[in-house]
Length: 283
Image 1 (cartoon, rainbow, N blue to C red):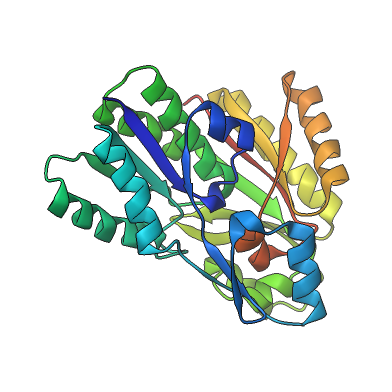
Image 2 (tube, rainbow, N blue to C red):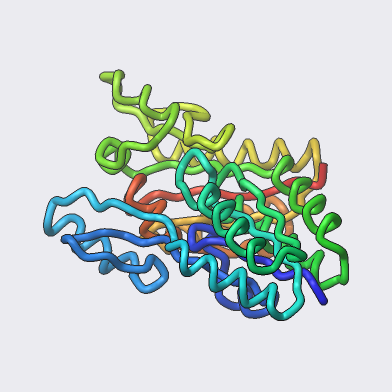
């Protein structure tokens, strides 16, 4: 018996890490041109080409109850405990639905142990929680110890990013405190973050360059005060910018920094050209 980790597709964890740590992914869905696609089956380039071509606002839906049920059941039948870590409950019904699925599992398997965690965020700010859970499980820790390790990462993590344009934020809708941006007449580049499970404004500057400078400064400040856990650069269809930012952080931090694209579910709200940094500190 061991602990198995389940998350959803908006964690955007690199495929090699998913395989290395035996992480199960439940895919959210994108509804585009009246057709539903699993997020994991869509490339960013194809998605945005279709989105702009049809001038359509895509919608999204959570993983099906059946998909989550089958993932959980497979682990439980094998005698394993389950830790599920999902997209912020203020951004999606995925976390809420996972509770329904747990009750369904417990009706059939009353001795099953399933712990569910609201990551209160998305992308690799959530992904780092998932990876830590998987590492803790691989080390042989029990389900309570795995959960505690996840909560430490959740409390010490941050995600800062800047959209290339406000167009997608305006189209997308569910942007929490960032809605305040649309009352301004100034040309601004907002630096966004996730607080209390919602997208909100961290700072506002005049250029994308200044926004990236501000993000780098904040990362360095946090690392100086609290020590560095892990850091990654996120981007949407701007790989060269992502690599440039990663090299810059490598020079400042003295460690390798990888990049990872953001998929359609989160991307439809911020759009191509968005770039940012997800990280957590030691304390």
